[in-house]
Structure formats: structure tokens, C-alpha cells
Length: 277
Image 1 (cartoon, rainbow, N blue to C red):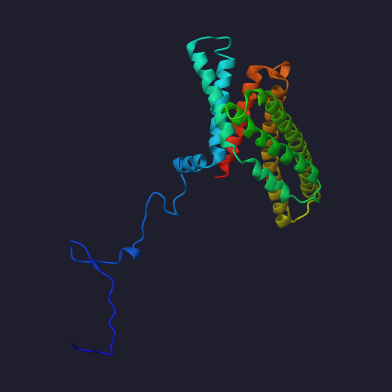
Image 2: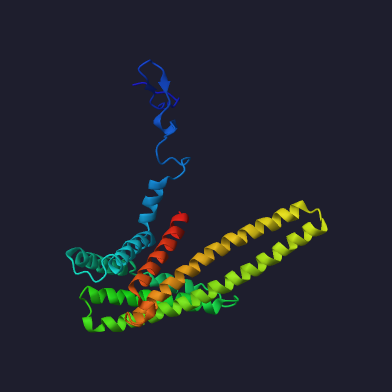
């Protein structure tokens, strides 16, 4: 046995190609694949990410449900065919599934209210919107338990009324808040546009300042468009809540109108979630 004061280290394994040239270890080889960081997500990537989220699945189910409702209210109105009966059962099943997917969603509203400042200009409206939505999501869980047979059926109408009223209260806060913010954005946009016109008329040379103002005007216009879409969505959903409160009675409870409103709301919310990916 021989001893030596020199310590030897094992060199990393070498990899040789068929032509005899050496390759670096696998750890130093850049791995390129369909999910490499340099690749921009394609439609399939975004679809997978969309459906991986609870809101994504909920919006897809909403689109399917109200499309089915629209078909039943128009093409198959007053029909008692086998297809109509199967579509009605399908639509009802989707409605129950959406309630199940919202399990615990009210906690997000509780968390939002807990972190909500009380010193902002529209804080009371934010409380009203988030609080109403939170109560709605909580009672929807009880409605789901009724449909699942855990809670007696006799409570179904009571829970439906409570959730519809809570939803409507939330939408009153949300619609008012959204309308006020759109008005404020319009006022600011008008002031900036007037300033740009004044500078152009008086021949002021402030190219850098003008570009900043134009950029702010564009940002305000984009924000106003998003809030207008959100306002449209809230109004559509508020009509559905009113129909639930009135138990399908009244002019605003027309099946085609409600189905169209629900479908429009679903398209807007799905688009918003898709663009956020």
C-alpha cells in the first residue's frame, strides 16, 4: 500500500460522440424545448394556464351554461323534445358545478375587506361591493349543499333570495364605483386634451411634455375601456340577480334577455382573465 500527501480529484465524466469529439457534461448543455424561457407562450400554453385556474374553469362553464340557456330560450323555446330536456338537465348540472367550484371563494372577499383602507375616497363603495359579493359566495355554498341533498330542500328558496339580494347589493356598489371612476377618468382625459389643444394653438414648443401628455391620455383611454367593459358585465349580472329576486317574473326576466346578458358577461370576464395570462 502506498501513501501520498497529494489528493486527487475525480474529473467529471467525458462524453464522446461517434466521431471521437468530446462533449461537455449534460449540466453544461443548454436544454431547449417547447417550454424554454425564451419561447413566447402560444395558444395551447395559455389555454392550459387558463384552465388551471379556478376562475378560468368557472368562466368556461359560464359560457357553456348561458349558450345553452340561449339555445333553449330561442331555438328550442316551448319545446318538449328529448334534446330540449337533455339540454335543460345539462344546464342545471353546470349551474350546480359552478357553485361547487366557488367553495371557499368568499374568503378572498374577507381578506380584501380586511386589507381595505378606510381613508380612500370611495372606500365605502369598495366595502359594499366586496362585502355583498362575499355574502353571495358564502350563501351559494349553502345552495350547493341543498342541491347535493345535505341541507333540506325547504331552505332552497330562502338561500336563493339571500344570495340574490347580497349579489345585487354588491353590484350596486361595484356599478356606482365603476361609474364614478369612469367619470373621473373622462374629466382628466378632457383636461389633458384641452391642454394639448391649447399648446398647439399657441405654438408652444414642448415636445417632451406633449409626448408625456399624449401617453397619459392613451393610458386613460385604455383604462376607461376596461372599466366600461367591467361596468357592462356588472349591469348584465345585476339583471340576473334581479330576475332571481323576482323569481323569473317581470319584463326584465325575459329568458332571451337574461341568457344574452349572462353570455355577454361571460365573454367579458373570460376575455379579462385570458388577457391577464
